[in-house]
Length: 194
Image 1: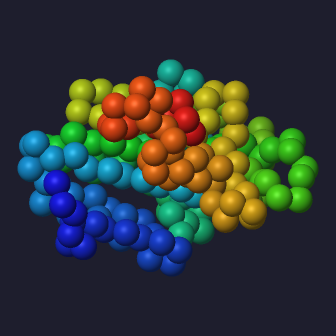
Image 2 (image 1 turned 90 degrees about the vertical axis):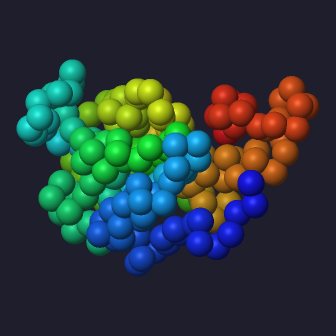
Image 3 (image 1 turned 60 degrees about the vertical axis):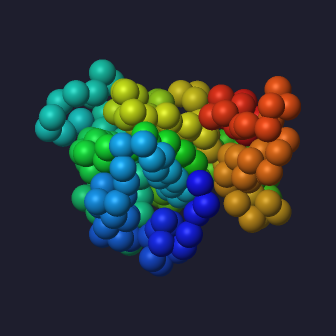
């Protein structure tokens, strides 16, 4: 339908705190109807650590997205189980797009860098961040698009002024992702394009 400003909770830079992200998800829970579709998009740093209660990770690691005010990349970040608990009560269909990664990169170019929390020791990082974070949300009512696979990093580019995945998701939504020319862009088409 026609979107109005009161249907959008956009948090950027210093507004993208853990409390504000939680508040925006609660806003969706309060305002979304069962026939609606809600989009949660996060582009930023990611981290992981030993699994904490509930012990539910096959690799014994919990994954985190790190909001703007994250000073300790575990306590101040949003754990995968926490994000799941916040979003599960939303009655609407949920689309989750995660443009984040877990690892420091081997790429040393001047334009592109990995989207990882600075100074995170490589030895403490799980190899399946995006896949595992998405796994916690992989159930009925969700569609999850993650920027990287278990062996990939999510990248950001100064030239694109964005995460590379984010840039191509947005570009694809402008039309190029419509592979079958049916004037509808599916989540599969946008993911393949990105």
